[in-house]
Each structure stands twice: as C-alpha cells, then as structure tokens.
Image (cartoon, rainbow, N blue to C red; front, side, top):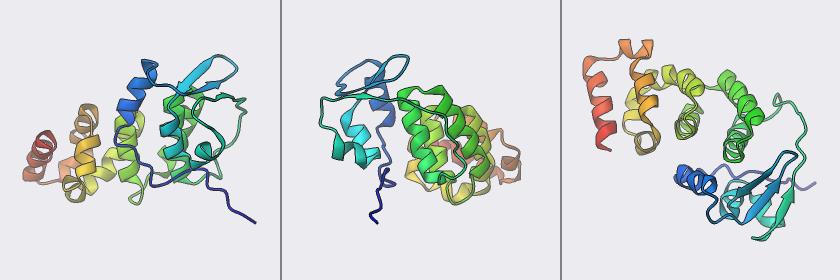
Length: 185
C-alpha cells in the first residue's frame, strides 16, 4: 500500500509573515479556496511547499471547493498539527487555529519546542508563546546560539520569555545577554 505524504516536514517557511501579508493584501493569489462562508485566496507555492499533495493535483489557477467537517485532533502527530495550525492561520480558520493551539499546548516538549516557538512567534499566538517560554528558558543556552530563534522571536515572545519564572533561575549574565544577542541578530 502506498503511503501518501500530506505535508512536508522540511518546509519551514522563513517568509511566512511576508506571504501572509501578501495574502491579506490579496497580492499574487493563484489558488482560491471556497468555504461555506467565503472565498479565501492563497499562494500556490506556499501550499505546495507545505503540503506537497497540493502541487500534485492543482495547477496555478484553480478554484478549490472545501467543505470542512469537524474532526478530532487526538490521533494527529504534533508535526502534522503544527503544519495544520499554520495552514489554519493562513486561511484564517479560527476553529482550526483554536483546536491546533489546544492540541499543541498539551504536547509541547523539548523535542518540538523550537519549531512551535518559531511558529507561534510568527503568528503571535500569546497562549502558545506562554506555554513554550518555560522550556525555552530552561534551554536558554541552546536557544541563544540559534539563528532561527533570533530571527523568529518577536517582541512579545521575548518579553514573555524574560517574564517567565524559569528565567529567574538563569544567571544575571544570561538574562542580560539573551535580549542583547536577540536585538543585535
């Protein structure tokens, strides 16, 4: 039986906010997704990079009719949920964003906190940022050397991190150097 890959775990977009801005301004939209309520535009390249199956079945000028049904996130892998969460953000689907946030909050751990931190800072999800902050603070030495951490951490994320009780355990030097390194990145 053939396995069908519905997401690409290597498609972490450094330009997510740029593409999101373009979508909001309705620039360079080449895929239109019709939901029950309205039509949502998307960039074919973004959908194809994040979800290879789109590239296999769609050209660049399709209209897609989507009927969303309620489903459970219980059996979805955290990486797939993160991709679904980002797609829901891009499509501005509040129900999926909220469901993905709840699911991710319960499953954030050291092995996935870096990806979740990047995505939640990009989408400015304060709830997920608050859940990630203690793990980031606990592993601050590792994060301080990460270019991805510096690039994706927004002001609210850094403020939340600095206010985290786990940061009180960090050395004074770390507390001062972390925001300086972030600012200078």
